[in-house]
Image (tube, rainbow, N blue to C red; front, side, top):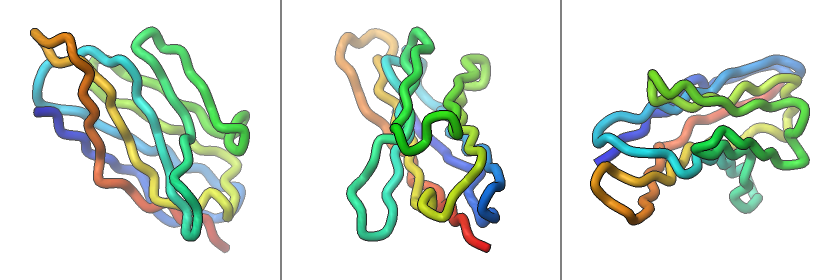
Length: 121
């Protein structure tokens, strides 16, 4: 089993910054892709940013040039640096690891519980 623990959410003023962390523990694994998702009130779940096992990154148009996703392999942790935050960034943010466990060829998905980000004056 792989467990994901998210941290770093909270209340921040417009224009401020937050860094979300998603730390993985448990079985040894190889990353295929890690994704940050978010769900805002009254909206569908949105893909925010991705980072692959080869460190290729992608971003939603709504966050491009403001958010940055990164990985620290030594700590089995993925980060989402969020700058110039706007009220419309308010959402629950979820981390997803799509991985291969040691000794397996299949892909598996693991999810964090989510962390609340609120951008408000």
